[in-house]
Length: 449
Ligand SMILES: O=C(O)CCC(=O)C(=O)O
Ligand SMILES: [Fe+2]
Image 1 (cartoon, helix red, strand yellow):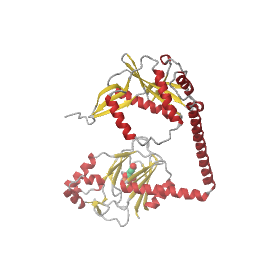
Image 2: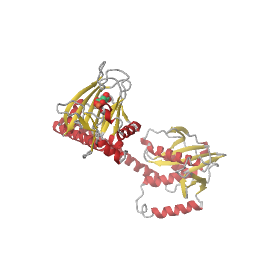
Image 3: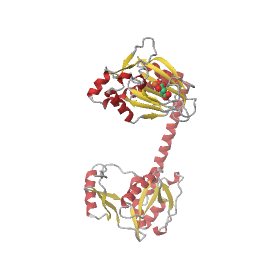
Image 4: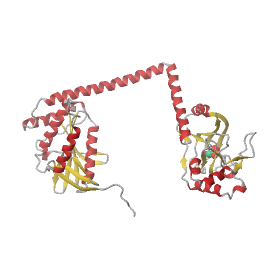
């Protein structure tokens, strides 16, 4: 079977009126659920007037003959019934215009919320019609304090001219009406029974707006004060710097423990030095650059396959001073994950495999085991250090096969980047350096402390 549908599809999409029995049933259940939550709350004036104005706008829209009684979207998903309310629906032949009325005391995101709601409805309704327009009628109680321009109110809804706006790549028709004009129309047509409520709500909205800007001003002032205090207090500055450093170091240590590597961008070499002091002892520093006719792989421009560095390095850190213009990507592989895919007898077998020592330090021996299962497990691996007699070892071959097939983690270091890895767990390598030859990484080996 192909194409198994995991999500049940939307079915049976219809527009129904508020009297539809399903909807009535749904509402009664909904009311029962919300009982006791809102009853005792004192309603704000803006909340009360928004109900009044919304109803008034709905009546105003009814002055257009094309407004539809059906404004509830009914649909089913699986065996469940859903309802979505629209503030109004205008039907002209096969064209639907769905509308949202928003009364608010703020600007901005109220309208984008309306747009989002409308668009969701449009997607559902597209099951029954392809020709759907969206309208937003916005009424801002705080209209005096916004830049939004008001549109003309035409007592005959059919003659209203909407503006065309685009939000999130969808087109909407939009108007911004004066609450005073709507209220007056409502009073004249006996829809609004409390003419003075609007003034009270506007007054309330103004107070809220004043509080909002005063709060913002206060926050800004406090921020400046704190900044000034820090700027003039070197002791406080040091404390903050130390704490920031401590947090960085702890974050790095946690990442190294959990996933075995960490990539930081835009850092200084001083920062790295401070981190390294907290990780252990730096035992070796190398400039990873390209030398002409280099015999050593690392200073050639060639690709390097997965390997670990010297086993005395618990961590390797690279500071990128300059990256090449093409290639030179770091590749990483979690040896724990590779190892985990082996069969038990293959794991056992690997413990007995010794690789040539990567001779650097005076006390280096001749060879070193590929895996040491003491806790935490340690890997040591370089394909160029595998002894000839191991070349046909089936466990090693399987280990190498899994590495080859696994998806590498690729990181392109940029100037100022730091990469730190747990050298006993994460294999590293790089793709060939095909661009500019001035690539410069400074590499640090850090022993356990
Ligand atoms: O050039 C690189 O990105 C890493 C080379 C490498 O294997 C190393 O620095 O140990
Ligand atoms: Fe390396």
